[in-house]
Image (tube, rainbow, N blue to C red):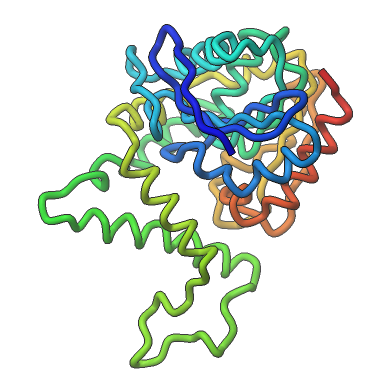
Length: 296
């Protein structure tokens, strides 16, 4: 995989890419970065696609958004990245925050995209549901990003480790009894090299997230995606996880598909919001089948 920077009016945007062919643009969830796509990219690149994963403004190695980080600002920047890379048309895939930004980008500039793929778009369908989110889900990222005694590192590790435990609980694929910790074996005896790589990527992403992450998150959950989805004309696939541990607002594939004139929805088995890292082959199959039906 190659790395590079796109120079845009809003700042420098870091990306990783691999492959040759029709471009497929990947947008990460927050507060992650293009690192979360390192497992998925090779599967897509081998099938004859130029795969480009961005660090959106405010994340990873990219500059912070100059105007605070609204959905519209980040989506407009995605269009500017395409211009900087001299890409006239692309497929686009996004997960969670990235799905929201991809939706807005496709609504703003439909001629630039051959297909839109959304994984767990955070769709809020009523004012009461939105209010419930803001009263019941306080933003917690920034307090974890720094502390005088370094305890934020332990908190971040435990938060990332909980994602692994959640996946084990959902898929009934916990480590074999031979790996169960005993009185003289620590809890990290559970972890494989794949899990350790995931923890490294996860913690690095959270440490690099800029102070605008909460602003972006707030903008995502205040954004009127219902009206934007209704205006989208490009073929769209919504992919949702089947994990009971994902928030209800992320599993509204049927509602998303109904709002889009060319919308479809599927559920990816044994998956959660980390499917791009723990189910890359299965997710790649879904993506490839869809983009092949909608060549640029």
